[in-house]
Length: 108
Image (tube, rainbow, N blue to C red; front, side):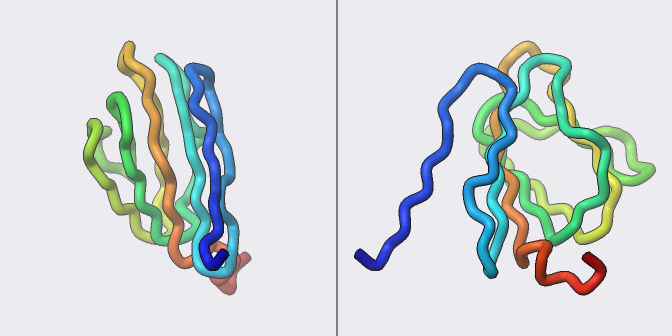
C-alpha cells in the first residue's frame, strides 16, 4: 500500500485535533460551538483555513474582524497575529493547513 490514511473525528463538541504532522505539512481539524474559538496567537507558518461548516470570524493584526463561511479557504501569511472565533449559532468546523510544517522555520 503506497498511500497513508489519516482519520478525523466527526463531532458536535469543541475539538482541536492534530491529523498530520510530518516534514511536509501540519494539518489540524477544529470544531467550535457558539462563543468558542482559538487563543490569540501568531501564525507559525503559511496557514490556510479551509472552512467546512459555519461562519469563521477572524481578526488579523490590527484589521477589523472579517467573517468567512463554508467553501472559503483563507490564507494567512507567516507571523501574523490572529484571533479566530465562532460568534454564530451554527457549529464552525474548519481545517488548518500549515505548509511548510512550522518545524521547518528556523525561529522555533
